[in-house]
Length: 260
Image (tube, rainbow, N blue to C red):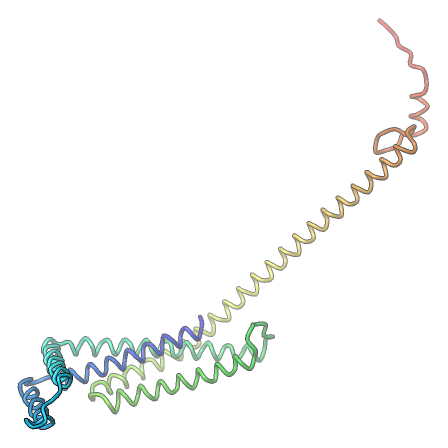
C-alpha cells in the first residue's frame, strides 16, 4: 500500500463529496413551486437590465441557461434524485475516511520503522519525514474543510449524515489502523524471509560455480602435469598413473605363446 495513492483517493473522495453537496443544495433550493422561482429570477433580471439599459446577448444567454438549470434541478427534486445524491455523499464520506485512516496507519508504521530499522531507500530520511508531515497536515485540513462544508454550508440533513458517518468510521478507522499495521509487519516479514532465501540461493550458486571452477582448474593442472610426465618419461606409460617398476619388468619379458 502506497500512502501517496491512498492520499490521492482520499482527496478524490473529498472532491466528490463537495460536488455532491453543491448539487444536493441546488436541488433542495430549486424544489417546490418552480414558477415562483422563475418569476423571481425574471424580476431580478429586469431590475438589473431595465429598458434603457438592455442586456447583452451573452448576459441573455447566461440567464436562459440558468433558468434551464433551475428547471432541471426542480425536475430532479421531484423525481427523488436528491435521495440518490444523499446516499452517494455518504458512500464517498466512508471512502474518504477509509483511505484517511489507512494512510495514517502506513505513515505511523513507517515512523516506527525509521526508529528501529536501517533505511535503505532512494529518498533521504529528511525528505521522507517532510513528506509525512506535509501529508498529515493536508489530511487534517481536508477533515476541517469537509466538516465546515457539510455542517455549516449545506442543508442540515447533510450535517447529520456527516456526524453519523464520522462517528462510525472513527471506530472502524482505529480497527483498520491496527489491522493495516499488522498486515504491513507480516508483509515485511515475508519480504525479509524471501530476501534471505534469495541471498542463500545466490550464495549456494556462487559456491557451486566456485567449486566447479576449482575442480576444472585442478583437473586441467593435473592433465598438464601428466602430459609433461609422458613427454619426459615415456617409459612410464601414457596413463594418468605411471607404470610401476614391476609392471615395466613384466612388460619387458618376452611373451611366450602356447598353442592348442
